Each structure stands twice: as structure tokens, then as C-alpha cells.
Amino acid sequence: MDLSAADSPTSSESLRDDLPLNGIVVLDMSQFLSGPYCSLRMLDLGARVIKIERPDGGDLSRRLYLSDTEIGGDSTLFHAINRGKESLAIDLKNKDDLASLRKLIGQADVLIQNFRPGVIARLGLDYETVKQINPRIVYASISGYGEEGPWVDRPGQDLLAQSRSGVMWLNGDEEQGPVPFGLAVADMLAGAAACQGILAALVKRGVTGKGSHVETSLLEALVDFQFEVLTTYLNDGGRLPKRSNFRSAHAYLSAPYGVYPAKDGFLAIAMTPIPKLAELLGLQAELAPYSDKPASWFGKRDDIKQIIAKRVATKNIDEWLAILEPADIWCAKVLNWQELIASDGFAVLDMLQTVQREDNVSIATTRVPLRINGVRPRVARAAPRVGEQSEAIRKEFGL
Image (tube, rainbow, N blue to C red; front, side, top):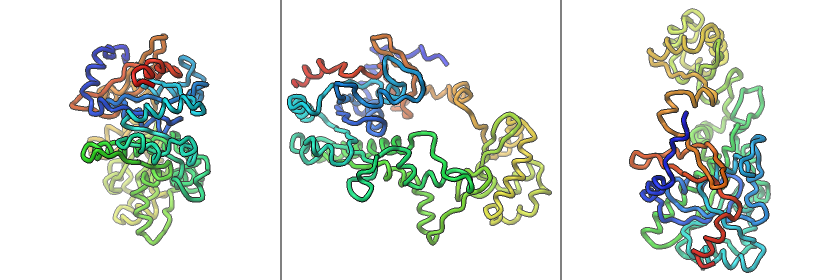
């Protein structure tokens, strides 16, 4: 895929002028993933994001490496989640810098912070204090487990939040043990939830002129992520679901729901009546004992899936797709990233872009999963260096 055909900075900026959050100034005092993901989404929708960073090293995620690749002195993770932002270096232990930050807060629309509970209050930048500076500000707090309770001082880290939330226990085969997501799913979901709350609070402010305090946590976001299955559990006599012990894909769904190895890869099969699938796979005899007993599709799902797996393994994925898709069976080839990016289905979405910086930093990354009036917003500039815009921001805002 050719990423060199990005819009010019001039045309990109003119398009950004029409985005919904154009004119909104966001102060991002957060680090790592959850808060920066929230501000990234707002930036994609047109907001101006000023990242408040320590002068001595900045956001700790600058040095949180997902691989041994470094770009412009920072990790690919930092670049991915901070593209297009500005950096203002502020020493929170310096009285003059704190005074400047308070002055900037008085002119901002949104403030995002994910300090451990109690830290922001000790800095004198908690919501009640900030509200006195700027009654119209929308203030967002992201924590690990909320602001009170026995877990409040525990590290609010993604893997640990997954562990406490139930999602890790829900994944994997029954005898496999807990399986964590291969992504920082708690951080991303908490950031998305905070963004939703901020946008709602901005609407309220537009009506009433008053700001709001939006709060969420990694744990709350993961609980909400499970709302379908938790609702079933809460109204099912408190019975824990039993995961399939063979190629489990969903604790509450019956066979054939799962992922099956074929000759040349893996085939995912979603909700499908067993009789219809048995006919298409040529398994009428083998699946006859279960075909007219839908209850057994769950109770005997491991047995059924074992039978299906043996048959799927006899053909290539394209052979199975040629049989199953015309019959409207919900199925798909499991793609790795190379296969995804090479696919026509991905190419048509135009989800990749190249962002650049004046010091020859260039990085290929993703684009926002939204289109506004038929156009997917594009960001032309890479993530900033620590304090890169400090002088310009101080001059502009009179700090």
C-alpha cells in the first residue's frame, strides 16, 4: 500500500478546519496510553492537543518499547498515540511553571489527567481547584480502579486491570487457564470511555455554559466491555459460564462458534445451525446425533467442534470459503497483519497514513476509525519532541 500519497500539510489543515472539534483546546496531562488515547481521538476530530510533559524526559511512554525500533529517539508506541500533538515542557515542582500552567488552564476547554488518585490534589490541580480557575473547563480523570476502595492505591496497569476484571478469566479454553488480551485493551477502552464523557460534557457546556468532571477507570471500562455476558450471569442465578475446552471463542455460545485449523491457515465459523453446516461439510452422519437437538449444540459443543475440526483440516481455506460463503454461512479466514494490509477489503478503507516531522522523522501509522461528511480526517505531523512547542505556546497564551 502506497503511504506516500498523503495530503499536503496545507490541504490537511484546511480540511481540519471543518472538523467537529476545531477550536477546542485540550491540555493532556496524562501519560502512557489511556489518557493519550483519549486526547488522540479528540485531535483526530479537530481539537488542538497540548501535551504537558516533564522537561527531563517527558511522557514515560517515550521509552516504553514494543520492539527494538526507535524513531527520532522515541518508541513507536509513543509516536502512534501522540501524533499531531504539541508538547509544552512544565516542571510541576517549579512554582513559576505551575503558575504558568494554571494560567493556561484558564484558557483551555478540556483537561485530561491519569495520575494516581491523590497525586493531582497534592499538586493543587484537582477538579475542585481547577474549577475555580476555569468554571467552563471539562476535566477528565482516568484511574486504575476509581477514587476509593481497597484497590485505589494498587498500580493501574493494563494487565493487572485485566486480571481483576474477569476478562482474562473469560478468555481461553476451559483447562488452559486465564488468557490475557494481546493488546492494552483496558487502556484503550478507558480512553474511549473518557472521550465519550468529554464530548457529552462539551455538549452540556454549550447549553449551560458550565463545565463538568468526567471520571472513569480501567476496571470500569473493562466491566462495561463485558456488559452482555455479565448481564447473562447476573440474571442466570449467578452461574459461572463453562468455557469450551476445545478452541473456545465465547463462553456462552454453542458449537460451531470457534476457530478451526485448515490445511493452510485458520477458519473462523460464527453462529450457524448444525444441520445446515453438517450438510455443507459432508458431516450428516457424524453430526446426526446432535442435529435435531439444539440444546446439545452447547452441552456437547466440544464433541461437535472436534468433529468439525477434523473435517475442516482436510481442505484449504479458499476451498471451504467457496462452499460456505455462497450458502450464507458466517465464516472468515483468520488474517495476520501482512494478509490484512494486502487485502482489498482493508485497502478500500484507507486506514493508513504517514506522519512527518521537520527533523526527518517519518512514521507510518493508522488513521481515525471515523469519517466526517464522507471524509476520514488525516493528521500530517508526527509526535512532538519534549517541549518542542514550549516557546510558541508560552508566547501565544502569555505564560
